[in-house]
Image 1: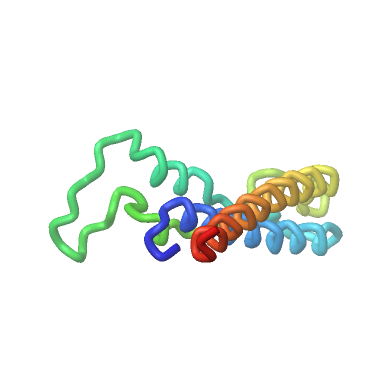
Image 2 (image 1 turned 60 degrees about the vertical axis):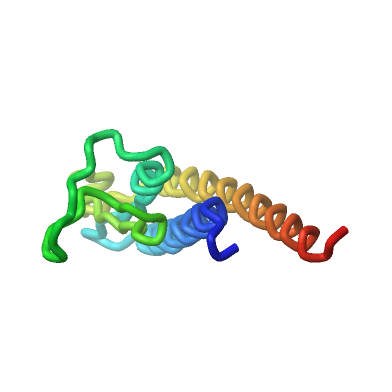
Length: 133
């Protein structure tokens, strides 16, 4: 499991989906707070770039002070929480739409459930190999 690329991708996906659950629940809790800007968690694009390879030529890093052009490893992918200011849903400045948040919540729940089944299946395969059956 230490060197397994798929395991690392599944672990990072579960981390990102967990952060999205937290962000989504915070949005729903503040649905009636004036001037609250909803938050969105983004990590899929970074993870896709690591898995599929970069779509553009990666810049070479020759010095520690250079800024990388994107994540180079799965562990470098960081789920980002982004505040969305430019959408206004209500007159008091709050932009949380409960229906949208519930849809995002159900989509995240389905993805998390599917990923946890993949992790359980992968774990059972490891137990099978270690057990020697």
